[in-house]
Amino acid sequence: MAAGADAAARAAACDIPSLDRLLRDPAFEGLLGHYGQSRLTAALRARLGALRQAAREDRLRHDALAPAALAQDARRALEDSDRSRLRSVFNLTGTVLHTNLGRATLPDEALEPVLRALTTPVALEFDLGRGGRGDRDELVEDLVCELTGAEAATVVNNNAAAVLLMLNALANRREVIVSRGELVEIGGAFRIPDIMSRAGAKLVEVGTTNRTHPADYGNAIGARTAMLMKVHCSNYAIQGFTRSAEVDEVAAIARRHDLPVGVDLGSGTLVDPARWGLPHEPTVRDTIQAGADLVTFSGDKLLGGPQAGLIVGRADLISKIRRNPLKRALRVGKLTLAALEPVLALYRSPELLPERLAALRLMLRPQSAMQAQAGRLRPALEQALGPDWTVEDCAMSSQIGSGAMPVEALPSWGLRLRRGGKGGSGRALQQLAKRLRELDRPVIGRIHDDALWLDLRCLEEGDEAAFASQLEELRA
Ligand SMILES: *Cc1c(COP(=O)(O)O)cnc(C)c1O
Image (cartoon, rainbow, N blue to C red; front, side, top):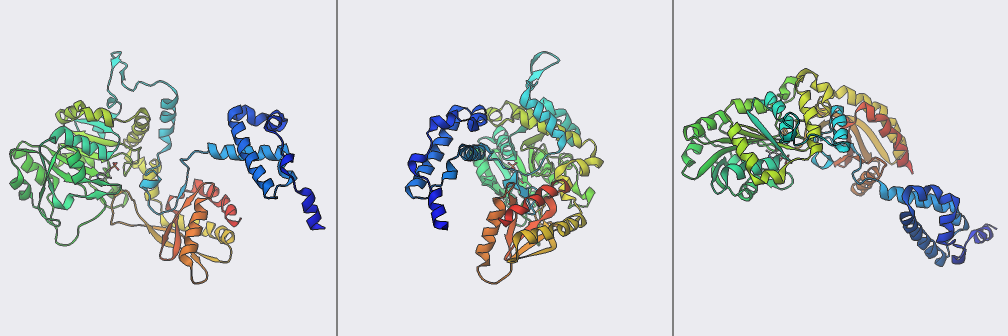
């Protein structure tokens, strides 16, 4: 009897309605208005093709042919193809400034200016006082100078661009002296020697990997020397029998030869994080005070702003950099400047930064807050995953990321998921990680030590309900 009922429900290719008839059906009216005839036609044609194939394989059912069902299918397909590829995710990797997840999340203060810059004409390169052409750097230059003590500042696409531009403007066809211990590679193929050669500058290495003395710089200076450079060892640390020349020592030598000193500070913070109990980092102001003529740093690392590269320092050198044709190729757009200005403005009230600057707030989240959160989320996750998995809440350690303070770990708390039985756990973990990535807002964790780790540092309380509510989907 069941087989008979099934046969009755089965449909043949000749039962499939025509495209024209469907487009006239009231069930499609809303879709037609929203997506337009050509897109809806294409979506329907694809669906009808799939139904014909199902008919050939004798697995087409009558109920799939109802106009309401077909409209529902078309809506789902169209919504899927319209969904932005730049998906919001939950960053539970334990890395706060995760380059692959967009680094710093911006404070609310940046929203309104960005929205305005998107939707209205803005005075981007227009001097409203004189009524003539202006310079886009002027939008943030005074603020940057106020916060760093620099004479002048310019903004480009990212710090890699800032370093490239600085080297090309100051050292094209000439030599730049750098310590061997500072010839770093930053993730994503940024290597100081490569950038140097692309900028047209010749690298002169001094010292050894672990030890470079101030005199090493002095001994390497010759007729073709254009500048002395120091690079922040962002993502590694040399420990033990080490010596590196400080900025002030290198600057003293440079001054005797009338040469500039450039410092690639990498993360480039404007306030020493030690103020909040985080590891000490030299600020941009410290570096200028120590004698650097130019300092370059990122906008989206410790600074907590949009992707950008800032070059700050002596007015005559910045002016030379601005006149370099590469500056035009590497300049930032209005959206970046619209986001950067309000982030910089937050630094005028440093005592309020832990509250307002999203990136810093995450770095400073107390372990107890994450522990309480883990306690709240654990039962729901256990339920969703079923008896094959054990969910433990436990202490973890997160990192700041993007090469900031590589050796320092931030004590955090999270959930550790392990496969109950033995064997094949690697594969099962990969599959679980995949299921988490397939959620409506994908959850990105970290596989380590035969477990999937969900570090809760970057799941702020405001996002917790959204995270918890989609755990249901995991059960399916
Ligand atoms: C991160 C970093 C860079 C590259 O900066 P981007 O903003 O990612 O281009 C260059 N130098 C140092 C020392 C860095 O830490």
